[in-house]
Amino acid sequence: MNAPQSQCSTGTALERAARLADDVAAVWADEVDAEARFPREAVDAMRSERLLSVAVPRELGGEGLSLQEVSQIARVIGTRCAASGMIFAMHQTQIYSLVKHGNTEALRGFIEETANKQLLLASATTELGIGGDVSRSYCAVEDLGGHLLLIKNAPVISYGEHSDAIVVTARRTPESQPNDQVLVVCRTPDLTLERTTEWNTLGLRGTCSLGYILRATSTPEMVADVPYSDISTHTMLPVSHVVWSSVWLGIADAAVEKARKYVRAAARKQPGVTSPGALRLAEVAASAQQFADLVDASARRYDRAVRAEEGSADFEATGAVGFSLAMNNLKVTTSTAVVEIVGQTMLICGISGYREDTEFSLGRHLRDAHGAAVMVNNDRIMAGSAHMAIGYRGTI
Image 1 (cartoon, helix red, strand yellow):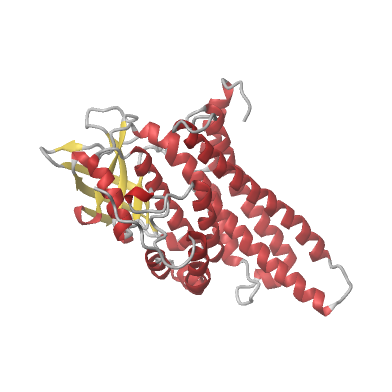
Image 2 (tube, rainbow, N blue to C red):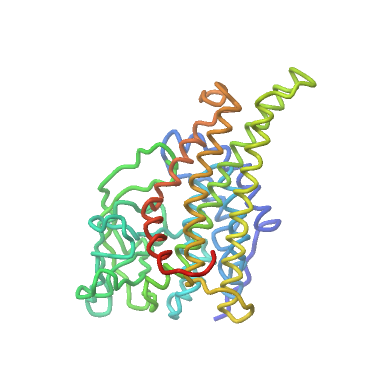
């Protein structure tokens, strides 16, 4: 069945995202942070602006944007509200995974439905008892004769209670090894979420990433027939590293923007005098540019690699060791850089940046920035990179 062409609001996807960021996400960001609540206004605006389907192919009702283009949208939203940007980014990671690997008729139909109805997708990949290693599962798919049952004790499911479906990792069968995993789409009406933790964190509070015992039913047709290890290597990990880094870049943008306004205000009070803050601003702006260049280059590298796999270019495969190392390095580098950049802007703005009641306040940005390194802990990523690097002889 041919999907109808998407009917978008006025402007390109990036223009629509900028409008959403300024008119909606920015307005509610402080309240979302203070109350640790889901940014429903921003997500509703994503739906009305049809931003949830920008990565869905045109033939399935989306806009078929490249990862580089989706990265720009995540950055723009993240500048105004990091939690809203992260929800957009996490959703798009699931979209890319299903578009690339959801090759059953039912999953293709689900992707089309996601575009038409602007469904919000969450994921459940972590599990208690596996030490943060998402390449292993205790949860198993049980075939009950025509329908499937999954029970998963997940310490984190971001915005799970607000999603329309949750993409779940599980062992292929109860007899399968922990690393023999599949990806299963579970619709919200077919699952229950029993809270096991609350979400009272320093930053990214609006992602509502509580712990749950998930009980869900699905059908065999809603299981991707590609091993999860392939989905993770080729799509889920590189895409998540790019779009998460884009949100963190947005946080850095917001901090640098406030620092620039602060320096300009000081300059108006002392015309002709170059303040220490101005010199530091020049330094932090250079760091932010390097940050932006790295994210953009990584997104373009993924896009080129995907085109190569589709036969339209001669480049590297997304499963190559050098590519995987580069994407790991992206996550570790950017999650460190965002904290350093926001910290430098705090020195520029001084007490005005430290306070929570000024236009130059950097508190939310700093708290959000510190979440970056623990979203898939950097130490775990570096351990994986060390294992790959031992036998790798190429360049990154």
